[in-house]
Amino acid sequence: MKPRHQRFLFITAGVAVLAIAGMFVLNAFQSNLVFFFTPTQVSQGEAPKGRAFRVGGMVKEGSLVKDGENVQFVVTDFAHDVPVKYKGLLPDLFKEGKGVVAQGQLTDDKQFTASEVLAKHDENYMPPEAKHALDKAAAAKAAESAKPGN
Image (cartoon, one colour):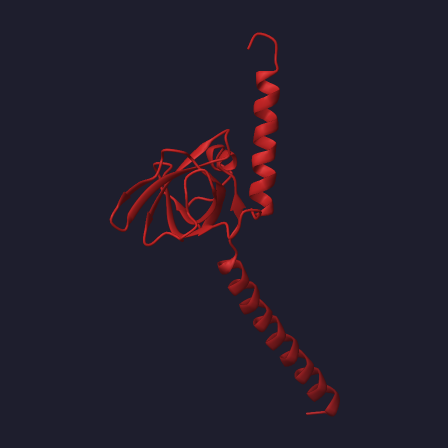
């Protein structure tokens, strides 16, 4: 085999190895990617079915029901609500009326089954996506109540 053919074969093999390695990296990245959705987006069907995602907002007042390790509560952005089921211990800062982000999957009956629940960590923190969604929902609610005839 000529040196020119050997170089070509070596370069081709190197490119193939890099392509396969890139494919594995992208596949791993895709399977670990978790998006954030608001309760409004979930109720409008924008959230993925059968894939993990995060839903964030406020824990609705009066919605928390505990039965041992089984917990049910409602996440709201004040425009729409998402019922959440969770089995496990809640964070110490988890309270009704406070910010929360839950990670899990949506079931066929529009129930969100959480695998992880995260509470805000101090008085001033809220995830930027959740803060934006709550501000947007509050503005829409204010605009709705300001319409004539309401």
